[in-house]
Image (cartoon, rainbow, N blue to C red; front, side, top):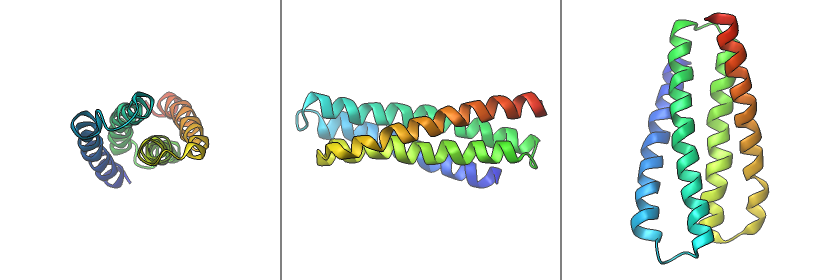
Length: 124
C-alpha cells in the first residue's frame, strides 16, 4: 500500500506543479480574479496534501499492517481529487454547482488528519 500511496503522491506532486505553472502563465489575464484564485487555492491545497500523503506512506513503511494509516492515505488522496479537482473544473468551466463538491474533499481531509493523529498515537 505504501508503494501505491507514494506513486499517487508523485503523480499528485507532478500535476500540482504543472497546474500551478499553467495558472501562473496560462490563465493569468484569461480568467476573472476570483476564478484564478480558486484555481490557485486548489493547487496550494493539492501540494500540501501531497506532502501529507508522502508522510502517511512513509509511516506505512514502518507499520505496514496499520489499517488506520491505509484509510488515512485513501482519505488524503480522495480529498485531493474532490477538493482540488472540483476547484480546477469550477475555475475552468465556471460551473458554480461544482462548488458543492469542494467541501466534501475538505471534510475528508479533516477526517484524514484525525485518523493520522490516532494512527500515530497507536503506532509510534
